[in-house]
Amino acid sequence: MRTLIDTSCMVAALCSWHEHHEATRIEVERSARTGGAMLLAAPSLIETYAVLTRLPAPHRISSQDAWTLLDANWGEGEVIALTATEYWRMLRDCQGEGITGGPVYDAVIAACARKGRADRILTWNEKHFSRYQGSLAIETPKRK
Image (cartoon, rainbow, N blue to C red):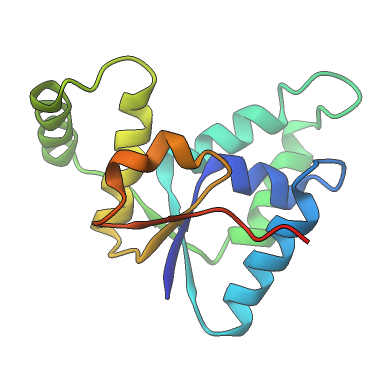
């Protein structure tokens, strides 16, 4: 199974203090154990770095630590980025579907998932991606 992991799950997987850390870690490890591919949308990779380095104290980490965590956990992962043409197509689709504001960022993640032939998006923000249910499975890590 090809899984695209979004920012909410990337942060949860990396931060042991996060309320969803354990469930996310277990799901990511289960996916890896069963041979599943873990995909990263380029915008989520950047956003995760930004979040980790701007969290309020005591959870903020240095840029070096953020880099180290990301590289150690996903440095070998498949990063999916849109081309300029794909961005323009995605924006045209957003305009046509009336997608505005913050949900445009979710549209970028969904477009990356489709480009990477993901079977599912793993997220703690299911509602943000509900419009893409059908073409992609939208799943939350299982809670204990």
